[in-house]
Amino acid sequence: MELKLKQKDDGVYELDVKGNTCPYPQILTELALKKVGGAVLEVLTDNPPSARDLPLVLKRRGYKVEKKKEKDYWRIRIWK
Amino acid sequence: MTEIVTIDLGEISRFIGRYSLGRDNGFDSLHFLRIKIPAGQIDSEKLRKIAELSRKYGRGYVEITDRQDIQLHWIRSEDALDLFERLYEIGYYTDMCGQGFSKACFGDVRNITACPLSGKINDFDVAIYAKHLTSYFTGNKDFLDLPRKFKIGFAGCGGDCLRLTINDLGMFGIEREAERGFVPFVGGSVGASQPEPMLAKSLCIFVPEKKVFEFVKTVVEIHRDYSSRENKAKARFKNLVTQWGIEKLREKIEEKLGVFDRITFEKPEYSDHNGYGLQIDGLYYYTLPVWGGTLSSEKIEFVADMAEKHGSGEIRLTTDQNITFVDIADIERLKKDLERQFEIKEGKLYFSSIACTSKFCGKTRSLHAKDLLKKLIEICERKGMKDLRIHVSGCRNSCACHQVADIGLVGKIVKVDGKMVQAYDIYVGGDFAKLKMGRVYMKDLYGERLFSEFERLLEVIGNGAKAEAKG
Image 1 (tube, rainbow over the protein chains, first blue to last red):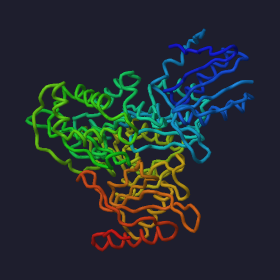
Image 2 (image 1 turned 135 degrees about the vertical axis):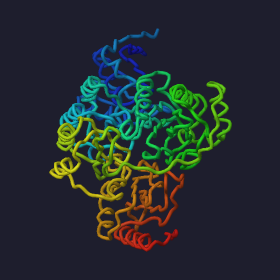
Image 3 (image 1 turned 90 degrees about the vertical axis):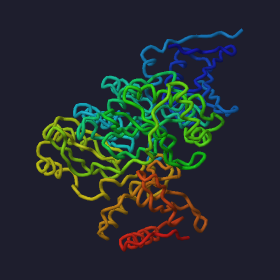
Image 4 (image 1 turned 180 degrees about the horizontal axis):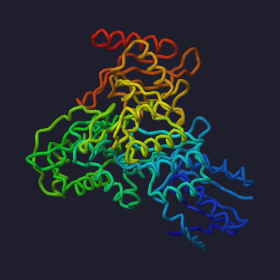
């Protein structure tokens, strides 16, 4: 099984984890953050508990996080 | 140009579709882990391993659910992969918990329940089907995106000991002309979803044992392919059964599997396995009442020790949130040992009363469902009323099936003098085996009035009078 990261822009990647329940959005986000290094990562999730938890956990780890609702999912923007 | 970067998921892949964490929102817990115990059958070694997991990851707290699962709380998502790895080693999986999504999607087949004495009090071992089907559905990509969850149960003791008719599909085991098989009951669900809370209806066909696997698979496929995906409220199988009617559903099944023999069988008889009884091999079973199904890691280790000391080491969890010891030679010695850690009491009140885990899901304020059940049991003891079943649900999702108990309570929040207060509605007269839903007795009770009205209701029931609905 593979995770697909889309490079949207220079230094901005997008990870679509819609359809995944906890804890996978968090686990997959961590894998993606390792891969993108210092770039910005935007995570798309439609799982409400993950939209609640991801910003909390990432902020504790020193990331800056912005969460925005788009249609029926959240876009969570993460950067250092 | 968009560039795609791929990351190999490696070991994580084997957990996706087999394990998940559920959402908690109370008591400082963000996640629960609901471990499926197929047919509720577990041995002492695995029970000890779950005790270890509970101690390491879940503050040593353990719940037996009313679907024969074991549920842990306070699970941190960062511990999830370690937990999944350890569960994988012992061969257990979890609910997929797709109820968190706002749309009608990612429903899965929940823990398949079975009579806790399957294969022990007669040789019709219906748990075999529960376990076989669990293996088939677990991680099966064709069944991980049902419109909503799907609940299946198997009864084989000659009665309904597991609230069969609250299931989407309840398989009632019978013997007919020296052939064993099942009468399926379809479309049960007592939650608030559309069209309304309802108990399953008989399909009035005989499904022989050799066709059980294909039959269940076909019914779940029909739910997957035809139940509404418009929204969550419309997506339970009961809604499809109501819209189609029994006849159309039967036709659809028979289009795929051929014609089944018709049988007149509308209602199962009630049964339970409270207390102790004789097995077919001359040994005994004993059901230990566990109030609200709550235990500690130490207590389940003790249960494992007792199962080994007095029996074969096997334990059966019940849909009444209890523990049934099987293969016991000497019941009195077992009970005497159990008294070291448990209160041994007799009466339907202790064996059959259940409550949901509302304090963790955040749907109730104090008094939460399990705490309320404890208080109600104390009132019943004071009034000398021990032959009744009480179910307490924290909210209208009816996780404790309050509509099918002698007395059922369902939580709600009401506004009193500008403040939000925890209240409960009381239902009376439910009976799952008679396919009878309870009716509202009193609404919006909170504080001391909840207890005084409950006490008054006990007096009415104690006097043999019928409890009439009040304001």
